[in-house]
Image (tube, rainbow, N blue to C red; front, top):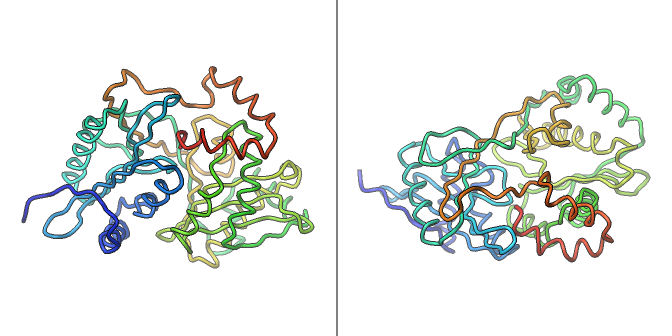
Length: 346
């Protein structure tokens, strides 16, 4: 067996295809390890990506996608991977993962970042420290609509049944424009800067059929919408939101239930990944109310120049005034200003 060599993914299409073929068959490979994220992050945000892979006997045996985020306000970090819930090294060989992590630490030191962050969904014994501030939620999908509904916790099941009587309809398409309009209003109302509009279109352009939008309407007017990813027989609702009407209509609950049914019936998905939420947050409690058990995310870090990790949580008291002010911005202004801040908050 030849020596293990760490390389960096370039622009060669054949090389990218080999990367993705490895991720497809690797047990630890997730949607967020796909090479397309290099294009998405560089094109949408201008961050420099360093997608490392381990090569042995002329084949890829491990991958580690990294992006460099550098900001005066929010710090200087090398992350696997910003704007993604999962990341870190992926390989079927623990020794290869160690080698990739060592290469990432060496790169972080060379770049002079404050810290290196690896977004593992599982625990690992290595040179890195760990902080579990987020959890992920998910469930297996029943064989039909009735079984999917039966799998939801009683209280939430009642809300979904209520929503089914509210005259709501839904469509599934590849049109990200409507989703962005609703999502951007929703996050403005939460006091959060929105991503640039072209980020949504880039996701669709890069991931094609693996990226889809489900939009809920009431009497022809859109009230909720979600952009989802599909990978390895799993659906991941990723960017979702609703108008002020959504709460009264229960259209978000309707939306996620219909997404489950659509994913099972039309996309042959067997699992629903409800994504991450900060522990004990409103989103955390909402997802838990569906009957899904929280699974801790084992985000790991290596301090390079920093003495401690920055607290970028919206719960940080120093951000409260900013959040309240942001909620009062006109929608058009929040869409204009948001991308200048959100590029460092992924």
